[in-house]
Length: 216
Image (cartoon, rainbow, N blue to C red; front, side, top):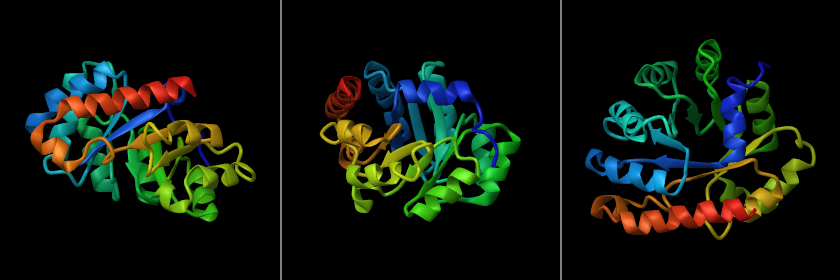
């Protein structure tokens, strides 16, 4: 097992433990979404690699965020997609499961990774593979905050990124249960909101999430 890459990155995520996930966002919506993320002080955002023009979106969002947020790539399932994301400027990689070739590429280039896990064995394997944090996914289906709390018993030294079922109403419960960070996507960036450019509703939910995390 290697030590997590980029300790400053991990320290920043622990201090601001929200990771926004953008999937299938229209290119034209990116300026408005970047503005919402900046206003709500969400300093971590992931572009799903199966989004059309995903790597172009990584480059565009990095420019729009102007160094005020870390932009990474998600749904990374191969070395090729990891390499494409890296060259596009992604500063971290997220996967729905543990992919050894992605871990190897990330380790070589000192990129923090967040491989997905569901069972205790998968959590352990992802941690041993060098995950910066283990992405518990889908957290809601696993039992939500109660499941996180159970995992903290045997795995109290493994940092958990909870993903799935995260909202302003549940954020504090996840953090109190022992999650170090929270990832969210469709609950805020729904297809309907993205298509209609409902930035007012998106910003409202982002601010609520940020406040919930601050209060925790």
